[in-house]
Length: 101
Image (cartoon, rainbow, N blue to C red; front, side):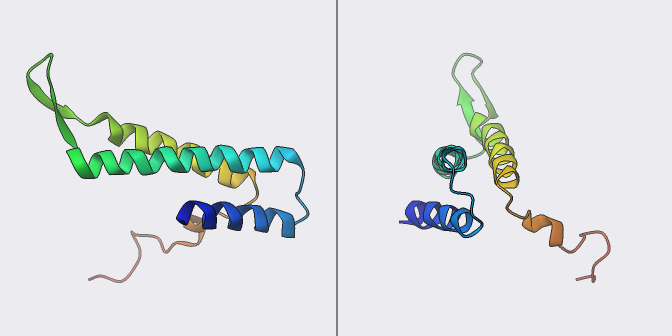
């Protein structure tokens, strides 16, 4: 359900801006493929945690899904920006100069 809503919202926004060429739709599909991969990585982190047993070395190591999730997120952001969507973090309040808790 979330997949279809997000895909529809992205395509709808592009169409509203007159960006209807196949190249834009292709980028939306690439973004959505990455979105699916990110969901899988997040699920793995939830199920197995941030550290997993390395059977070869017999010790706990970082779950590779952590670094892959960061890479996938960066690629998604690059596609998002390339499609002309505004980076919401550009409007975020700076963490170093806000009110103290």
